Length: 96
Image (tube, rainbow, N blue to C red):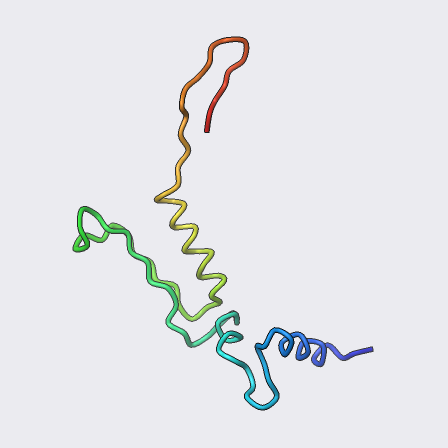
């Protein structure tokens, strides 16, 4: 049976996230739950760039978590559902 530490090291090496000579690579740190990288800064502007309606900064956490939060903000402000009409015939049709 392979020890868990050795198995994890093999996976990290296969993904080129770790090497015996250099240690962990920057990509591994970006994927870590906590890291030293500045992260993502998001701003939603008003009529021009001097008016900021919403600002969010995500930093020092996994780039995957930061991306998920950024997508959530995008969906809150820029995605919507639209009803294009209704059909009063035999069935009701809603177009989204």
